[in-house]
Image 1 (cartoon, rainbow, N blue to C red):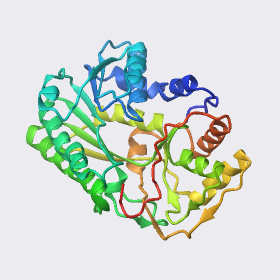
Image 2: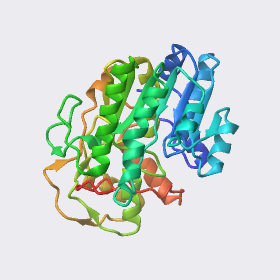
Image 3: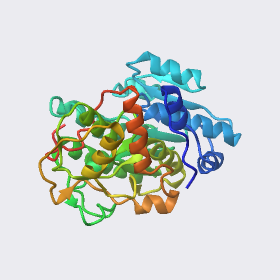
Length: 345
């Protein structure tokens, strides 16, 4: 594992750290031919993923286009990416003509989707999470494609079992999780139909200092809001490491698709995480409820065997988040609702 970097104290520090490639990332981009197209690059993870790709490609000395595609509802995001050498295309991917007009690329990362708002607008969720991936698989049938999915395709599992594995039967709870499983099934169908190598990444939960499970806990602690312990255990992974897996998985894309759980190796107790955060924030957490015997947990052994362990452990991340929140550091204002057990998002 690399040496732990210095704690970030500004947005610029954090963005630099989230996009800093490792030697393994650089080697992966050096071995990869052609341009990279990232669809849905304007969300929580996309901007740092394309910056990571740009920096790794530059360090590898392999000229290539890195193109970020999004509606870019916040134009400042597109300007930020352009300032770092990334091409941007403002596009509504649900418009067939706009999707068809995108440039061809041999490497595609698909990040678009909807989770929050599903309960109020399920039709859009199914369009984004299932119909659109099917269109992308056909539009870019000659590419290698990495598709972000979610650990929500699994049922809640025993907290003592080490987490769900990729070969376990899915058991999605609620329409969001069902639409995510539909995404995976359609990706697999069109991968085999078109001979399109693909990798499906079942992610839970990526964290950085402005959002994620640890930020959610810290915000509740500072606000003296009760932390419900019913979903008493979680997995988390540093967002940079999740993005690195996405880039490195391009070379491992296969037919049928390679499926990988992407998260940290630890099964983490929410009570313990909150205790560590509270100690560093100087505020005692307030708890409610009792820990259930099941939780949404994934086993990422297959991913670690391919790409190695995360570069930052969750306990260091707790310390970073506490420091960030204690300084009044910015939040993205996007709670994860990690404690939702009924699948209602």
